Amino acid sequence: MKALTAIFLFFFTTHITFGQQKKGRVSISANYGLTGNFFVRSYDEQNGPTDKQYFYKKNFIGSAAGLAVTFQVSENSGLFLEYSRTINTGKKSYEGSLNSTSVMIEDFRLRHVNNFFQLGYVRNFKMANAFIQAQAGVFMLTDQKQLISIERWDNLISISETNAENSGSKEAGVFLGGEYSFKLDTKVDFGIRTRGYFLVSTGTFEALTLTPVLRYNF
Image (cartoon, rainbow, N blue to C red):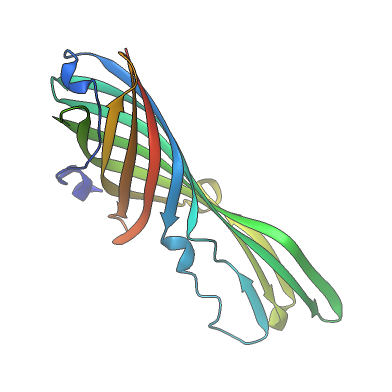
């Protein structure tokens, strides 16, 4: 955790009115789009005894959404707080048996949910008709992982969800990214943002997001 306080931040994003606003202005933004989650592909469903069936992996592509509040601290920079949520699912089907008992899974969707609580810094670069905004920061991650396992050697069918409450599933990391935005009217901006998340606590790359952003400037 101490390493997080020493990490230097930079990212890319756009903001059309940021360069025109005065210090102390506040903006609220919402985003919704796609995520690519590297963790959900990393499960090992094959190793171990052969008399088993594991359903752990989810699809790499999922959905991402978030809300942020930004406070401008200078003409071209600001600080923000953001909550983002990503969801990756995997549809599972299975027919088999466990000690003469039929087991069926039919089009059942397992979910992996990430909750990102973020504190970040933004730096704005004005272009002719738009803005590019560099952005970076730190985050705390909690997740909810749904798993199914069938283990014939110990007569077990397990359907479980691990989360922050029952397993202390929390990680810390840093993010970097960028956004390109243009002005819709005097107070509203629209842009496209990409962001990458790296877990310092585990030393692994967690996810990428690509989302349209709508921002209202007070």
